[in-house]
Image 1: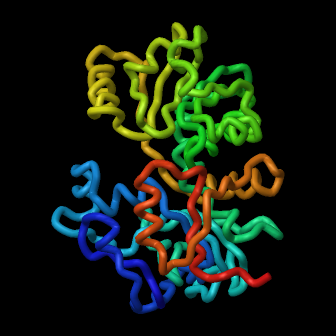
Image 2 (image 1 turned 60 degrees about the horizontal axis):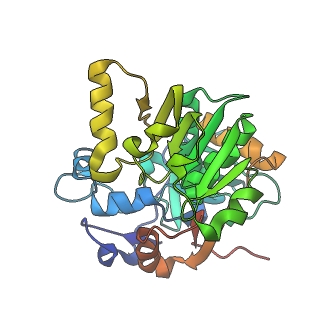
Length: 323
């Protein structure tokens, strides 16, 4: 099978699309023929091993897993012994085991892994939404977000930000989205109650406070967002922030026993993917697609994602969907 392989850490130049052995499903595993995947900020972080300490999990000198890719959508090609939930031909989507393996023509997933049947009629490219949604939902659940809460989402145009807006609305919250001029209409279309153009005004000085603030791109940081927090307000981010300040402030919060900043760790589960299936079927969630590319262009896609200019998800069409 073809796969995008990186045998060393580094820039997208280290990625090579080449033939590798097709995996075989072990007992209680499902072999998926991948039709669509994405390139995400998380993939870029794994590729460069940034921040450096992630090498403790991914391999100190070189990556343990050489095929990246978290999101996948495709058809079941074969099943291992003991599998009862899926059959060849089933259309499935979800998150890859260990956050790796989606950038390939085939992938093995445990039957009880983070995988579910796709909603009928949904194109494969519109099903690879779980990575951004997982990071968003992890933070929203850690907040305890619910009806009547007010939340500000900074960077509401990326994969995590567009997911956070939609999920926050599904939880009944009042949502303020902070985006740049090209994305004002998009933010409104996702159901936000208020949209702030960060180029027209300082979003941190809008004269309002919120129960929760989510920095969905990790560029604002706790110190800049602190004026937006109400008396019991809580801040969370999806990255370390400028000069790693979010990690520093999190450690300080632990010392002084403050609950004003949190940094929950996402964990992919079947239950989460099932919840996304329900939302997609009900029309409560939709994919925001920046662009689509063939697997052969994946190195260029990494370069684009690293610019930080993408909107929603960037899809890799591993196998063209029949019309």
